[in-house]
Image 1: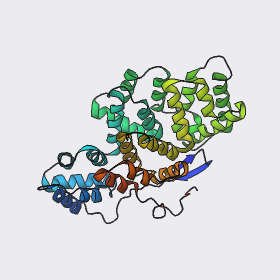
Image 2: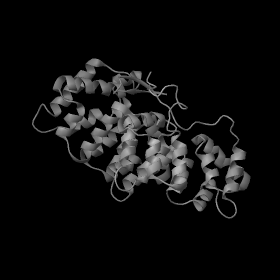
Image 3: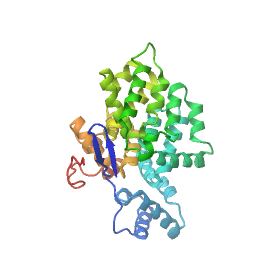
Image 4: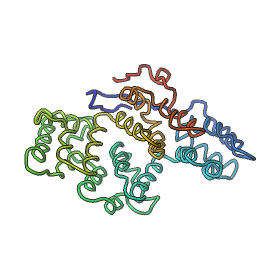
Length: 348
């Protein structure tokens, strides 16, 4: 897969760290997992070797085979044998991606307080088709629509922004897909944003929300809007938003700008924040690595090293321990990119 990257002004090829294995034998894997969990003690390394080295689709087949062969639920057995962050990581790997992300959206909305950053991370980093699948799964799992829960637990411009991410963009620019653009339209929208912010006293937040709320569905168009805005005002979009907004809508809009400019760099920053300072935000660390390892985690590793001058592998190694650490490192892959991509720059 390729993705338009505003920072580089070109398409970026996405590289995962976890791939489906070619010689896949789900019955053998199911038997090995049963042996690892049967009797006294648990062979955690065998669980890591199997589940961290299979694609999500292959893990679903293993779970089906496990039930067929032993009449047992694999996830239930894993929960009974594992604990703590290691359990959270392994059980997360066993969930289909749409269910996993729906679970985290629910937790972000209905947990203690609302985790606005998690809502933006998920709703702005995936395509519209992926979001519709996640939203349908959310409805199936919780008996309530994602839209309704967002309406109940958020407010103001931030609520409008999130709801826009779940609407289908009807802009004619989208006829050619998310990576198409129209220069004249971008200039017009940049002028609208300037007039809504710097060009008047006060700020029309809805103008920003209504244009940037659809950014993930029209990535290249939005990237051109950023360029046109700088030509008009002399400021970057980040500078304009920071001077005009505050609170959760400020953070939400800044995040979508980061995602459009360089999505792997956005996730690299999130991973650094999860490990920076006292204590580790294991919930964020697990969520990002589990959800991105089959999409673009190699790209994120490259950006992490470029920005922070250390490898993601070394950071995780120093911040975690035990089976949890070994499982995370298995998903992240080697510190070097040479075995994963032909060139560490990988920009087309």
